[in-house]
Amino acid sequence: MGKPTTPRPPAVPDMKTGADLAAVLPITAEVKDGHLFVGGLDMVELARTQGTALYVMDEATIRQQLRDYVKWTRFHWPDVDTVYAGKAFMSLAMCKIVAEEDCSLDVSSGGELAFALRAGFPMERIYVHGNNKTPVELIECLEAGVGRIVVDSFEEMERLSALAVERGLTQSILLRVTPGVEADTHDFIMTGAEDSKFGFGRNQGLAMQAVKRAIELPGIEFEGLHMHIGSQIFALHSFAKAIEVIVEFMREIKDATGVEVRLLDTGGGLGIAYGLPDEPSTIQDYGKVVVDGIKAECERWGLTVPRMAVEPGRSIVANAGVTLYTVGSIKEIPNIRTYVAVDGGMSDNIRTSLYDAHYEALIANKADQPREMVATVAGKHCESGDIVVNDAPLQCPEVGDILCVCATGAYCQSMSSNYNKQVRPAVVMVNNGTARVIVRRETYDDLMKCELG
Ligand SMILES: Cc1ncc(COP(=O)(O)O)c(C=O)c1O
Image (cartoon, rainbow, N blue to C red; front, side, top):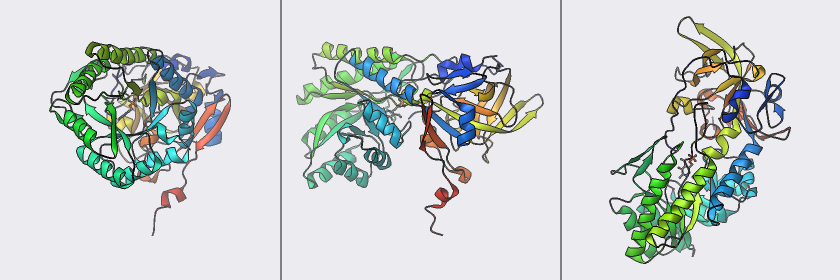
């Protein structure tokens, strides 16, 4: 899912209060009586009743983002599928929300497929990803009756064909193509080398070879193409450039084989606001650039406009989530920095250690006060790199405060671990003044359930 980096805001007290952080918080966030509220609930009270560390997801934000994608992509073309990328945040409750919003679901492992199955997600709306799906996973997909498998290599194509033939099935497939366009947050790079473990490179002719093979193999039906140019993308012209490249490839396919691409999936990647200086594009603008771009390029080459799919993950759930922690200790190192240590860390949010990601933070029980100091929020793990937020403007912290890290709804819980045998936090879905524990906190017994002694 790429290495999204966000330019760091200057490490100075910015005197902002919780009310100034709306751009990075769920849409229902508000400050009342000095406390942060999300989904109509007091986050300080929720931390007290549910314990910390705690992931909180705002259902209204998730549903609004899904609806915005459906609305603003179909505004330009009626046949666009919004496919939520489950890797960003997956739970049974999330699968049910995606199903209720009439969206599709991207799964990238047998485990994610198992969640979709358990949630009763309609299998015809499943897109299966992964650069090395195991034979067992391919069989699970065929037996579940998934809608589409996005094929990533020649070996996988042959394997899938044989497995489908053995079962008397024909599986619809997309081929993942590396268009040679890589998105940077603010720009794009044309990469001649197409150095990626994913997909078939277009420039060296591998993608065309794959299309020809897919057309001739039994047991699979070539439905179309897939691409994904990166994550946390701010520059919409990166998508426009990649669309130019892939639609031109659709024309080459038609010229070479007579076959028209019926489904074009342009992947995910739309950026979100992690920090206050971030100015991501809107879903409305994204929909226009992607859908109108495909239509215009098809018109240019005289191609039938295909069915389209977009695969957002981060932009559906990131700003819907916050993580609540309790401040356990405060270390002020004179003239160097202040460390505020919390009861979680790299086990519930690896993104800071992994990508040098940046977040906004606030003290939920002092949400109406200005962030008048700068501190580094440190985790409790045995790694000096275990930092949750570097140089965060913050209200003056005290032991026992509830510290809230914003925009943690994507790629935090889904990338969490049990490092140091830390139990994973619960996930609470809040909506209209009610809290529902959708994933319970792990216990020490959970940690030991696979141990055979
Ligand atoms: C194939 C594919 N589709 C969709 C996504 C979702 O991307 P994002 O969360 O940036 O929207 C990813 C993320 O890595 C991906 O690999």
